[in-house]
Image (cartoon, rainbow, N blue to C red):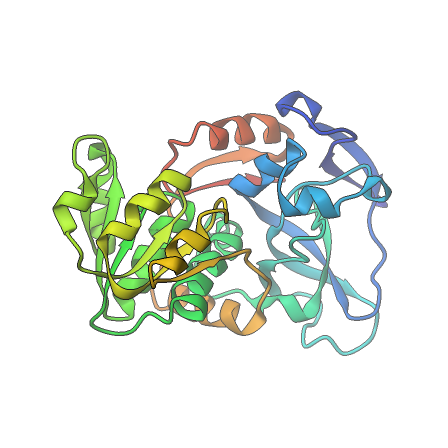
Length: 315
């Protein structure tokens, strides 16, 4: 076989711009491995980029067209360029590849930089592997690389049942933090099972529930939530946001440490995530699995904003 299926677009827009195409299978190049995909995660940034928004869309100039969405990939190495990559044909690997530059993960085969990949943990379902990298790295980098969360601290994670949120809850709990998470009533038991005390964002004001007691806040739900979250931080507290960076100065003027995260590939961190998954200490909840051909439906569900955990594509 010399061709493969991939999902691509030639213009920004709604789900209808996504279409399936047959294209040549990539040829391995130095420092890369060719992966036969077993699962590819669908993330909010995929939807944002498809609309022509966000850092990935800004970097994807016309020379990248057709644009192939997706940065999460899990699969098997099927070819290399003959150089040393740390992997051999037959190895199972997963990672977030080339973000924020185009990653091309919505495809049967993906050519990926070897240094951004980790070997897959044993006995973990393929769908979980495909859903882990971007959300897992975002959660890890937010909590430990930026907020420097420590054992015994108190952390509030907004959207605790979401893709990033449900992994951040588990990572924070594993680190020995006291974890609180906003979630709908339907997700309270789920969030509690992950290690967090849930707060109903529809019926409760988290500011009144918590008071000024949080050392760290992870915000992924917008500008107003960011501003409201400043009212629960202790003096000198830390807040990391995954959305609009505009209000960072407001937080800094009030004496808080405030940072905006754009996740980056990191092999060492992926290896840590793989280890936790292999030990059963970090589990990716997969809400729904779609065949690759139904990528538009997968993104439509993602855009609804009411999914628990992750959505995954399989070839």
